[in-house]
Length: 452
Image (cartoon, rainbow, N blue to C red):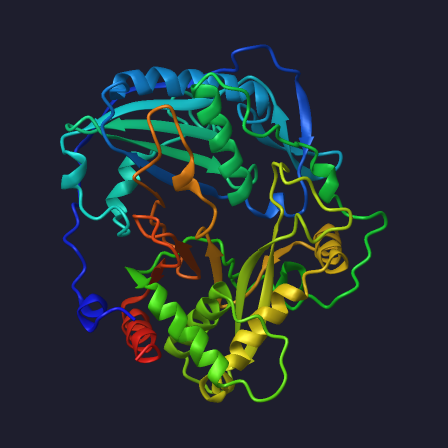
């Protein structure tokens, strides 16, 4: 376990302004002609209509100063707009089918060249969620045509030291974490003038609903908007919050994770099939901290945790590993707060484990069919999204692997992200949490109390 000094250390001072200057904003287009067509979006894709913003930091490289990276990366993106022919297109509503689709057209992606007045080592801990990192991704997608919304915009920001950051904003409708990692691998291969690392599979009909749709489970983890009175505000877990939020990174060492596993194992009473894995104990630990830190301290209140499960290998037949779209669904576990507080820890781990085990081919197809019939989205108190093992930091560009990759901090208090630490560090994990100040204070206290 980390020392108490590690746990109670004050957050590092954060630069509020990275002094970024935009030098050029332009649209880039496919390097070869592409076929104009409409691309089907699955019921998973069409719920995820928000943008995902990531920043990838690189140290100085004598053969690839930032101005060279600008040209090489821009050229690689232009070639990628051919391989990923939807990437330069736009989302549109098909009024005949009443479905959201991707219009594969050559309208293009966005590309921004910028610089910062700082050296890379002056902007603070890269793995601490500094809201100022938002300056490293394009602020306005419609920078050339008002109201335009490209599906992908990239920004290369150079630092005084010769290091640089590549900020990428993509619509979540087009990639999940695994397919975005494949996209980055392919960009790196194209930039190095090598064959594609993976030939992507763009056939999203593989996750189409059955005809007729057949919902075989209750799906309490989904909120049906048609059942909510119009006078009640809908609470979309993906919506940004307007209230003040504190941001913290909670770091678990390998010893901390072993301690959580041991706590679960020590509370087992009788035979069990529960898999006491790192992810399961971390998710159970987050669940009890989030449930018990809520302002509503009613012991009979139900708390539902959601967590992303990749369904590629769970379907029959399995999806190709190279599937481009969103192939992640939300598993869930639900319990009353008094149960979360009094149950042995292994019971929470068991429920997290059961939620993932529940995600069979039939269960996944049932959720997809549910989305064909109902308008709604995943519904829970908190969603744990793990980027822990995705390997963004392992992508090998011509100028080397990133020093660190991170999401841009966003105002979503109901989504908690798991990320690898800055040095990649084995089984250690960084947990990025955004909560209102009072809840954060409780969450912080519980997080380390349960580790004591």
